[in-house]
Image 1 (cartoon, rainbow, N blue to C red):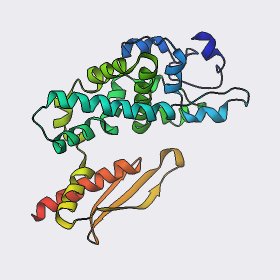
Image 2: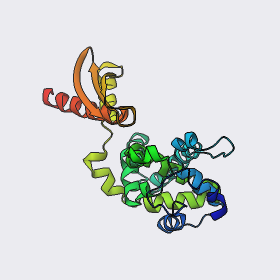
Image 3: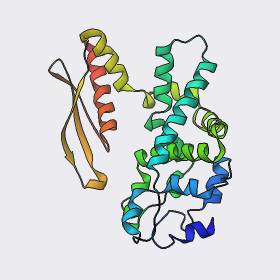
Image 4: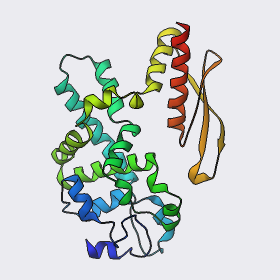
Length: 251
């Protein structure tokens, strides 16, 4: 571990600045010791480090493992829901799965791990607070699931998903902050009009690393909801929530 990380010492920053993003502490939180420490390091590495490294020092960032982790998380969650809810139909299971693997839920799980303390990023990105953004923390958590799969196989990744991500399943399902308002609005619009709601970015504010998006959702040519957020998905969720409130008041 030390030799692997020492190649990049001085070129990146983490919150726990011990020259190695404190892998041992994170492994203890995860309940798993990586045989290939480079898998965990890759899962923690933000793309901002690429511009800070000399050309002769190569490193892979978390995006590839996030892609894998997303698929593993989806499969593990689907299998668990099939087992736990044998009497529910495909639509009901899909709603639960969509909620449980959502960025909002994953970001809260990442906060429980204090994952932002272990993300590897450039000094500039660290000062800008990139490691504390919900979307980044959720993506890195997915990358860690991908790293668990590569290092220990599907069972290791599945067990972590069940124990850590799905351990508060009933609480997460009932928590209104996690409801997928976009999905609910889409189902209503499709049922009534046979089409999809239309989302549009009306404006953005702030610097590139801390941009706020302002989005509207239109149904049959009428604006029924407006939202704002640090990314388009969050702003669309807020707009959809407002639209559902308007719709419920009219019915």
